[in-house]
Every structure is written in C-alpha cells, then in structure tokens.
Image 1 (tube, rainbow, N blue to C red):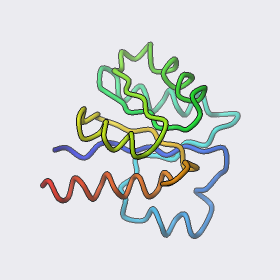
Image 2: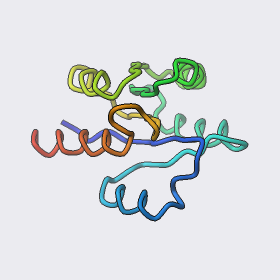
Image 3: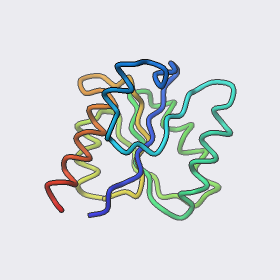
Length: 126
C-alpha cells in the first residue's frame, strides 16, 4: 500500500514549536498549513497537486471539513470525511486515499499521533 501524502493544519503555528518539530521528525509530512490570511492560497496549492485523486479530510469541526471539501471541488478530488481520528483510521483502511488533511488539535488522538498511526500501519503492511 502506498504511503499517503499527509498535511496537518491548524490555527496555531505549531511549525515553530520545538516539541512539535521533535514529534513530527521522521513522519514524512507533506505540509503544514497554517489557517489564516494565506490559508486559501496554501490549501489550493496543495489541492492542485492532488487533482483527480482521493483525499481524507479529518477535523472535529464539520464546518472546517465542508470548507475544505468545497475548496477541493474544482480539482476533481474524491473526498472522504471523518470527524474523529478513530473513524479516520477505519476509512483509511477501507478506502486507501491518496492524501490526508488532518487538524492538529483533534480530541482523543491528536493529528500528530494520527499521522504516526498511518505511517506505522503502512510499515506493517509493506
């Protein structure tokens, strides 16, 4: 199974946090998207590279998922939605999306731990 592209997003710039950098080191993240002024450009740039592929959107906020899904429409992307990371792991195992966009601040299992679980599952299957 191919390792999916993983993008984490947040309203807080975790990319400058030292512990975040340590936690994500070696995860082969494809991007960190900071929500804010440049968010539409940053997300569209990432979605353009995924044109015609499938993406799993993971966010506890339904409005955020719908906003991301709307932004993906012009790029002919198949969208899968999950509001919790355990649900997202099930969808990932069933659908094998090409990419995952996950909020960093998720309840129960945060986005970084979720990314680790995805990478671990792919190592086991290789």
